Length: 372
Ligand SMILES: Cc1cc2nc3c(=O)[nH]c(=O)nc-3n(C[C@H](O)[C@H](O)[C@H](O)COP(=O)(O)OP(=O)(O)OC[C@H]3O[C@@H](n4cnc5c(N)ncnc54)[C@H](O)[C@@H]3O)c2cc1C
Image (cartoon, rainbow, N blue to C red; front, side, top):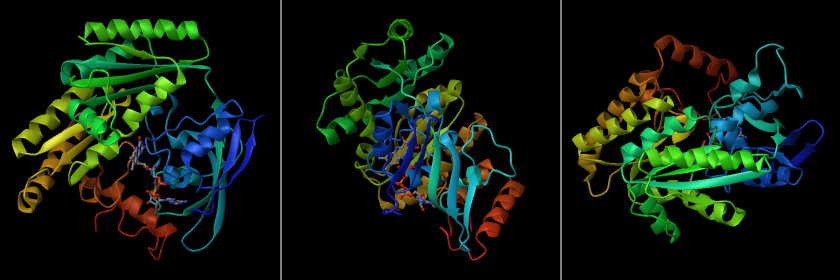
């Protein structure tokens, strides 16, 4: 789909855009910003991933916390079914209850139901001000336990990200850059945005008070664009950096926000019991923790003997905490054997029936999502 790379229209009056799926996410974001508009969905891969892939995976990213995920911005789309029909579903309206919402069914279906060829997005206006705080803590538990309290203190951050020390170290090595306090056990990135700077200054003050209550080592405030971009670069580079350490399995666990301390504690306990290393980081504000399990120096046999049971335990824990298997990466090939931990048989069967209706010859991403 790389040649479907046009931004066809930016409708400033109705805050909408018509886009082809081969546009790179960051290119689209920067283009709408020229019109004072905002497409807030910003997966860390935004400099390389395509809008079509974002729809297929229903990508989120740091700003999902305040602004929602890809599906929240799609009003309508055109797709080609595996049997060759071109279907346009949705409308250029904010409201629409006209039959089943096929566009929303296609979003997050991991390329199994149709090939997306055109998207009509809803946009919002670009906030005038933005501030970013980087807050190191001396323990993972203090860091993660603070998260829920930022919200109960009345703040709605536009992003609230968490990294444990080994993720920080990996990003420093990979990017050849230093965090201001790089030996802290964990760090939070907290961003606030809005149209009134004084209100944001009050938010920063409240964030500092909560952070201090939970024993923050330091509070680093970035207000100019360059300094914020430098800090975000460290965060965006984390995923690739952690994955470059060794063979890995990444889980995209998501739980209610206040259950995150229990999730991370449980993941660490499970990893240590199985003798495997885990590195956690992710979108703490919405309870979406990327758990990376590393092979390091384990032999192939040790890795293969342990990994499946360890992942099952992590997923069982996630479900017991009211969460689910994937917040934004999808099931794909690698998580499909765990699907029944989260979904019942009738639910899976109904999904398979939908797949068969769209794709009777099973030609679009066969073998994805559902166990054989
Ligand atoms: C370093 C890194 C960081 C990431 N960070 C985040 C993050 O912060 N938040 C987040 O949500 N995700 C994140 N992701 C995962 C994210 O889902 C993908 O980066 C992105 O959404 C996929 O887009 P892509 O163009 O790379 O798609 P691909 O990987 O090429 O494709 C993904 C799937 O979409 C299908 N697909 C692609 N185009 C179409 C189309 N036109 N019609 C139908 N199906 C299609 C493909 O068949 C495939 O199944 C990250 C990934 C990486 C590598």
